[in-house]
Length: 438
Image 1: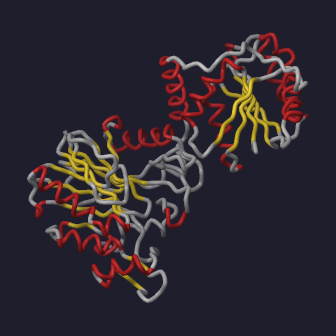
Image 2: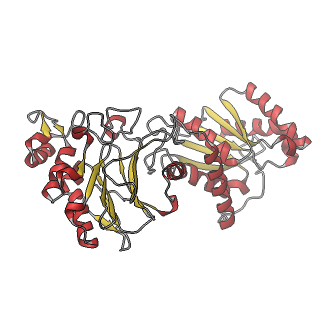
Image 3: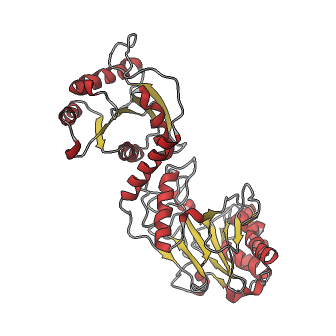
């Protein structure tokens, strides 16, 4: 069932401007007559040109739309100078109302262009259907505004212009929830490496569980890749790395490791490199983002370690890749555990808890319960030390620093971090990142 209707008037012929209320009235009547379940929310998209560029016929469009809006309950007119700005504003309204099944009524010549905008500003969470804008109210005798045409591919240059328009709009948006904050480790030498762990502040993501510096997009979430890219651009600007030379692990909750410069696996939870100026990163939203640095060989790594990856040894697999691929001495490798869910909050079913108990009984609290508390950080430290990493070369502030400069519990700090455990399916993601300075 359609939950909302968008009526796109951006390319409305000038000949119809004088009768804009008639066009809208006929369109709404058509919706009501031709749909068994009319959408309760209708949004009208129109172009609001700068005053210096307005023509007489355009000046009369806005009062007429405002007047019509006041007469029609459930209808809202959204005006801006660009399609990207209007569509993003409407997306915020849809998200606030938790609407995702949308009908778009528009001139036929705008359809393929609109699909490009939607592909960049929405995700697979939303469902769109398209209908040509009509001027008659008789379902059996509808007239399309603009010529009927088969679907055509949008020229590459037009796609590039749309992307640029979207990027410019997103760059113009203010940061939310405060300034962008990067946590840094004193263990990793900053004269050789650029690194940090992000928090949730300083981005443009506005959905509560994703707000504001979400750094991951998926088909199950409402943050599109364009928003994540803008958040990453702001992070890169603050941290000092090139967002075009940024590589994030393709998580599979396993133990595969990608070696930069070699064939990239389809999925992997660890990545290592000796290339300067290349920023590598691992996500975390309860899972541990791990950063690795060898200041002697000038090699770095990043890994994503959830409970499955911890048990599968992704941390030691990343260390082993640094040793085998770049000749690192394991005693020179530094490892920092980033913000992650702590043993104060994290529970697993008894069957999974037993595997952590075998690593060390102290990794499990309330072992006899149906869902014991698990310390994946302790398990990670034990596995790293068993692989030859010196205890003093592992930073886990939850045990070494009572002020917790780095290794905060993500579930305990909703103002600072995202948490899948706390927030559910539509959760945001922070990252740990590292690169070798030029």
